[in-house]
Length: 313
Length: 313
Image (cartoon, rainbow over all chains, first blue to last red; front, top):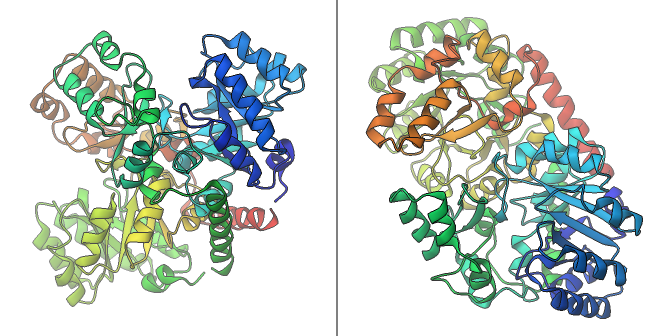
C-alpha cells in the first residue's frame, strides 16, 4: 500500500501502534516498525531518563522509522522535546492538550507531527496548528477518551470530511477487517492500541494481558466522566468507583478515590484489586497473546480476505 | 447484489429501513421497498386499527416485499400477530422482548423472522429461537438501546463470528461508505433508522426533521439508563433529565419525569420543549431532508465510490 499515510511515515502498512502508557516501550515500538507498521514509544509514563534510554534502545533495535507519543500535559515537556530533537525522532504524536503549544517548534525541527482528537472541532483546530495528520479516536477506545462519546463509525466520516490532512482511525479496531472498515469510512490508516497491548513485546504485565484476553462482551466501561473519562475493564477498582457513585460521591471524593498511580498499578504491575486496567472495547475481539510480527501478518491477511469478500459481493 | 440478505427478503439492495415509532408508516415503508430496499412499518406506535390501515395502504402502494417491526412488549400483541397473518406480511422484525414467544408461530405461518439485538448473548439466543437473521444494533443507534454500550465497530464482528444466520448492522450508518464498512466488518446488510427518519416520506414532524438536520457533533446522548437507555437529541426535555440527575432524583422520580407519550410529543408532534427527539449519532452526518428514492440512489453511488477507493489503494 502506498497512500498518504504510508508516504508520510515511510512505512509499508498504514498501521500505527498507539503510544500507550506502561505498555509501549522500545521493544513494542521497534517490533511494530520492523513488521512494517509504525511503532510509537509512549512517553506519558516515562521519566525523561527512562525515555532517553528507550529512544537509544529503539534506534539500536530498528533501522525503520519509529515515533513517540507525548501527552501535552506531561510535566517535563521541555526535557522530552529536547530529547526528541537530540535523537532526531522523525515522528511525534501529541495528545491530551493544546496542539498550538509545540506543533510549530517540532515542525521547524523537521518532525512530522500528528495530534490525537476525539471530535471534528479539535481535528480542525489541530489542522489549523499545522499538524501533518490527525488520529480520530472513537468512544470505544481504551484509556482516556472524549466527552462527546462519538463512536468510530460516526467520527471517522465526520472528521475525514472536515479536514484535508489524512485521518488515522482509532477505537474498536483489532482486525484486518476493522482496518478495511475504517478505510471505507474515509480513514487513510489506523492507530491500534488494545491489539498491540496484548503482544509479547508489550511491557504491560502478564496479568494485564491475561485479563484482556479473558474479557468478553460488556467487560469495559467508560467511567469517571466527571474527571477525565477513561475506558477500563470492570475490575475491583471499577466496583469501588461504582460504590462511590451509588453513595453520591462528590467530584473531589472521586478524585481522592482515583488517587495517583492507578494505571501503573494495573497495567504495569498487574494488580487486579487496586489497579486501573485501561483497554478498549476491542478487548472483546482479542483472544490470544501473540508476537507483534504474527499480529501484523494476521492483520494483513485478514484485510486482504475482507477486501476480497467485498469485491465478490 | 445478491447475498443472503437480498435473497432472504427478495430485495435488490441489502438496505432495511428501521421500523421506528411515529416515523415509519406505509408511506415511508412502501417508498423504501419501491426503491429496492426493505421498508418496515413500525407497529410500536400504532393501535391495531391504525396498523391495519397502514398494512392495507402499503400493500396498495407497492408490489415489492415489505415488513413490519413489532416490539414484543406491545400490549396487544395477539391482535397485531393476527393482522400480520391476515395480510400475509412476509417479513417480521421483532425487538424489545423475548424472541422465544412468537418466532415459531410466525415461522409456521410462513413469515421470515428477524430479531433486533445489541449483544452477542441475545444474538445467540435469537438464533436458538429459529430467527432467519439478526439486526445487531450498536451504542450509536437512536432510540432504545442496549446496556453493554458496545459500538457498531466492535459489535458487528463479534456477532458475525458468533452466529450462522446473516447479520444486519445498525447504529451510525447513514452513508454508502458506512454500508460498505459494515459489510467489511462481517454484516450482510444494514438497518438504517436516522437517515430514513429524515426523508419527505417519514411521518415524523417537520420540526423533528429540521432539528435532526441541524444537529452537529455531540448533539445526541444515551440517557435514562436506569429505566430503558434511550439515545435522543439534547433537547429541553434532556436538560430536565440532567437537572433531575443533578438533584439526585430516584429511579421512580425519573420514571415520573419521563411520563408517557414523550416520543409521540417529540417525533410526531414536533414539540421541542417537552418531547423526546429520538435519533442516532448518525444525525451528525445528515445534512438534508430528501426523498427516499434520492437517499437510496445516493447510498448506492456512495457505496460504489467507496468500494472503488478501497480497490485502488
